Image (tube, rainbow, N blue to C red; front, top):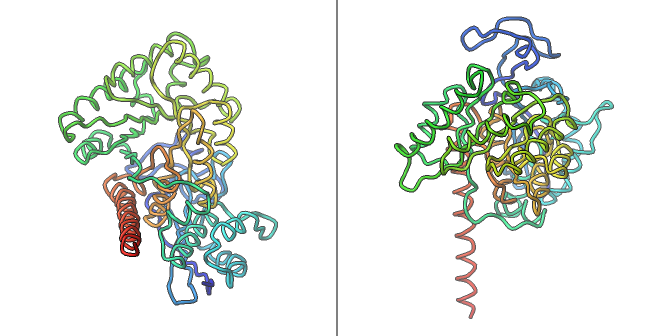
Length: 424
């Protein structure tokens, strides 16, 4: 089935773009907004509305499939592509991108998606958000043309065995870390709550506030969760442990703090994302390895999750090769085409590193659903509930897409088995 047309419509994402550099330089909040001047190129204000570019791909039978171009909340930071402005990039999708794709066979998903990775327009590669969104539409086009699920298309292209059950979903609480965690408990979310521990008042000058929060998570989860509920605690500390304790990270006081976190978590598994941020990839890998070695020598069972300086496919490879983390986050919009996120998860296979298929709160329901298929096709360790920071909506979108797909695939197998039995 051929691709007939490609259209692009500017729209909104599920959260906001924030000028991370301005915030780190001390910009103060005024309600939900920030006071001060932006410093990152492209920003008109420190916090501004998140944008998405809705991509419609028309097939020769008249069907239309979608993908959404989206970028992370902290766009333009840490070596990422510049701020994604939908109006600016719509002509690129409807122009050079469409010219390359129209007439191609929709069933050739991987070939079509990789074509975008190699494209150069006016001397530059396509923005990661464009590669991300258009590849989602191409995946949906292949599934539509083949009459199958996006999970099955990816699994066939990448030679994987899809998961038979939904992947554990990781809920993120935002700053409302108590109320949103309680929502997660009631729904029995398997991995939680993110916590957004990005300032000293949230962790405590000696880490005491975070310890109290972990203890609360344990006790409250047992009060509100379903029978037998044993969630995995996942806290993102945005480098604050490094801010409090400093390097080196295998010192007794640092290891002792992680032991305290393990004790606070009781029988529940716990993992800490972004324990430090030391300024560049190589130094970050060295610091993470140092911490892991210290924890292993002391027998402390707290896993560490790579986030800072682990943005691209090549970054994921570097962290995994060095054994710098128990878990790596695959930040889907930063990798470009959605097939590259799938390959990043695959890269963890056979290693001691688990893959967390993450992304950003600043995506859309369309990109979130596409990522649910990546998680299933690659059997990721966990997948982020997105978009937004309200928890419920993102959890519903990702969890339901996986359940819907698992059920459809199961029905298909049963129908095939019935046909074989009838033939016999």
